[in-house]
Amino acid sequence: MAYYKTRLFKRKTKHTSLSDESLLKAAKEVESGQHDGDLGGGVIKKRIAIKNAGKRGGARTIIFFKSGSHVFFVDGWEKKDVPKSSKEIEEDELETYKDLASAFLNYNEANIAALIEQGILSEVKEVK
Image 1 (cartoon, rainbow, N blue to C red):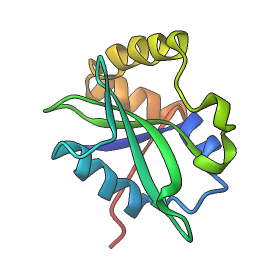
Image 2: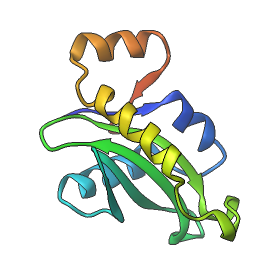
Image 3: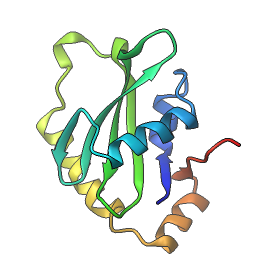
């Protein structure tokens, strides 16, 4: 099993304290069925704790995952950055996530290597 983050995810979470270590922990939780919502089509919503905020006030992430496949961190934001009036994912946004999940979850190693080379994906690695 390999874990990846998209360029969008990195850009939108660059000012948070989300480390690769916290992403790996979240990915392993998702693999064991611990998440905050299965939105269908391989799209998972997951809260991740950040420094001084915990999970409740921390980061929100969209992950593409299906059992036996890779885990892709696709989108993310801090809870405090979203107005209370727009807490729900819009239907058109969800459909876009599902379309992308369908593609990402069917990529083979060559596709993933090409996306890494293009800077669209980067691997989330354990720090040793």
